[in-house]
Length: 236
Image (cartoon, rainbow, N blue to C red; front, side, top):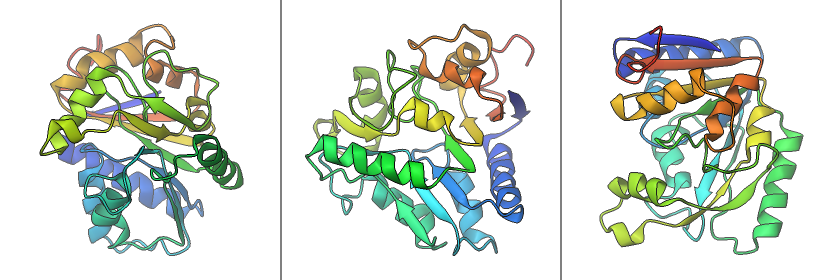
């Protein structure tokens, strides 16, 4: 793991944007993308840049189950608002949350992943150590799955919804095996609330009870932190 610590989340987010730029410059054009508050600043920097993604492919980690792409809290809406409307990609792929046939939808998404090996995979991390929506106890061998969200994840996501009762309890998620297939993984974590999770994935044992610890087994992982999220590391 290549761990880089910056004074602020904004500084780290700009470095993440440079990693996107470097990936494009070397002819690698398949990007695994994440949603949530963590990558927002990076997407803002990319949207304002002169980078051309018109030959690139974007494949998102996850989408809420039962939520239409037009819903303002869907991840399809998020990606269009923060990045795609500013920087069109040749192809964009996001799980179809409206598809109630979970077997068909997960098979469809696995086929997309197999056909488009990711050059760079962006990740955030949940306070419970989840990556994408792979909650504690998720198998390291899993591919795309319909998952039941934990109470802590539902609580974390409730801040984005006016009515907490509207927060989805299920989602489609890229599995851990699929995430680990990416050539380069870039994980970002900001704020004191992520400090314990970061300590666990960097210094703790590899365990399915903290899904992100599997990243210790990947040969090319970059972790960008601010001082707050790095505050519990032994050698920060």
